[in-house]
Image (cartoon, rainbow over all chains, first blue to last red; front, top):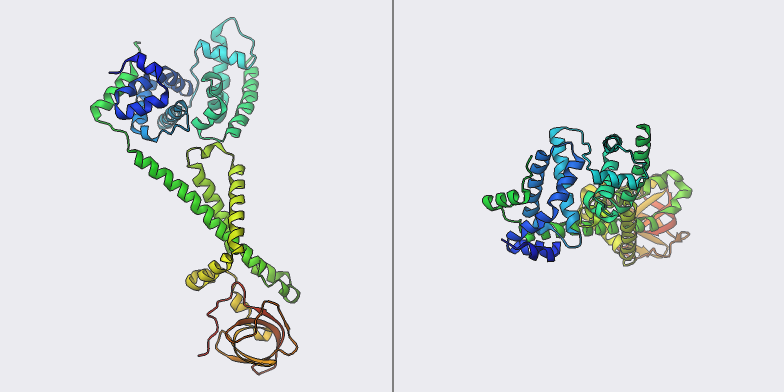
Length: 188
Length: 239
């Protein structure tokens, strides 16, 4: 098994190359993204942690199976997020559930800062309102806002994850922000 | 609930199931395939553009005076314009399938496609390939002639003053031509205005505007033009 310290020094692209020679290195890559992707999957789905973990397992297996498809012209993180996004959407459709958001405290803080929202003393009220306001948005706005403000991805990364033009991502974020604020104000 | 070590579980599943990454060749082949399809779409678009140019530049615009706007509408190269539009859509679709194709706006991709097809198409036209391609398709693909404007048929209306045929004899101001139905006509070209590009020589196909003498196969030519686009070069033979 590979040493974790060795892994930390390597870039994603280097680890992909090494994983293709020796699958043990793949574990370093998945550990690097495990928490982020699990949070992302839970954010964009109504699934509980256990179901989200099942999806993540499939994401890792799919990623390994398609590892040769990875092209360093794209960021590895964008590529694996795309796989996670597609897998999650596919599961949501299979289970016919309406996607909603699962927010943690740091998520709420980030959102409040990004949207200049006055913080409530009771954090759970903020969470509920943000959650509700986001859930009211169209999927196309919700997914870009989550990637931009919760996963802190830049426009090009979001474009690569969602396979949309960069300019469209910019427009969706701008419009999504307005719509989110409107929905949030309604809940006051 | 205890958090699972998802990475470890997935890793063990990969090992246990003996999953191996799909060969790089498969993905390389996919990339080459999509880029080839983009290239093919650009090429067909360029050919369509060059043929469109060729037809438009060689269209019988002078017939507007005789037949009005209806003739112009009938004679436009709709087939090639539709072909151009279709391959613009296909080119955009295949480009989107390439690695970074999704990053660009629809209008940017279509704009780039149009610029490429116009440049390549104009070069093909300047080298005369538009006309060659059109004539080759017309001669070898029977269905093509069924969907385009029937220029041969249009020019084979002697009662309407339109005649098309191959010159078989030149004798001063009198020539003989054979038309698409193998009828041999006596043409008086003495007072005809002859287009610069029309050559009066045996074996040349010409289009004539004039006047047919009643119940005869004698035709007084007023204007003579070269065969040009859309005319089947094997149209007129002596049986």
